[in-house]
Image 1 (tube, each protein chain N blue to C red):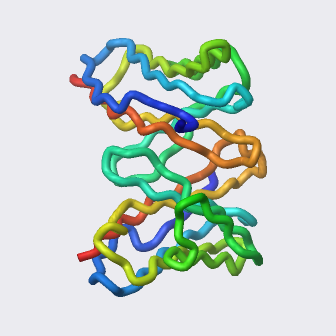
Image 2 (cartoon, each protein chain N blue to C red):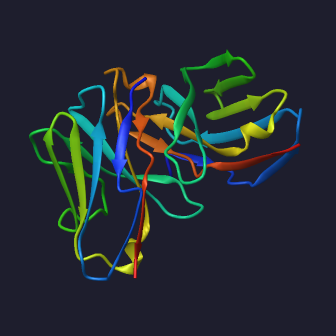
Amino acid sequence: GAVVSQHPSWVICKSGTSVKIECRSLDFQATTMFWYRQFPKQSLMLMATSNEGSKATYEQGVEKDKFLINHASLTLSTLTVTSAHPEDSSFYICSADPSGQAEDGYTFGSGTRLTVV
Amino acid sequence: QKEVEQDPGPLSVPEGAIVSLNCTYSNSAFQYFMWYRQYSRKGPELLMYTYSSGNKEDGRFTAQVDKSSKYISLFIRDSQPSDSATYLCAILTGANNLFFGTGTRLTVIP
């Protein structure tokens, strides 16, 4: 089946530094990928929709200058958390639609646990 | 108002029990309803989806949508310890965005 690979699975960084998270579709092409954030005991919150070859679409309240998204190819989207602070510590998950039929459900990566110290 | 609301639980049941997980949603225009299962520190995986109203069955799992009350349910029959996970309901909007409930953590005790 369709696989979405996310890397790294966990990362610890110092406050003020930037962290890049990669999301790859391994056996299909994805013109659109989605980035979610999940705080402990809370729901997955859609942060942004990543579009290949164009600018990402951010959800209300998500700072586009802080969460930089690049979708340079049909199999790779990256999320860069710039000038990370402890409140950015969270579980970040990407997803993509392998079938083109959104109702078939999106395939999710395994997530990246970010801890900012 | 959130698009979808879910009781976070946690929920503990003995092996073999019938489990009922429920969500409510806000917009009567929503048509696609999904249930995902998420194991700890992993991404969610799709269990089932239903379109519009009615029931859908897959093995021990039954998804139910009641559009009149904007209520969605997932039933698990003959629950097994391997069913222990967090279950998330989700709705798919017309813009193909997925919005999730909080998730209900289920533990099936052997």
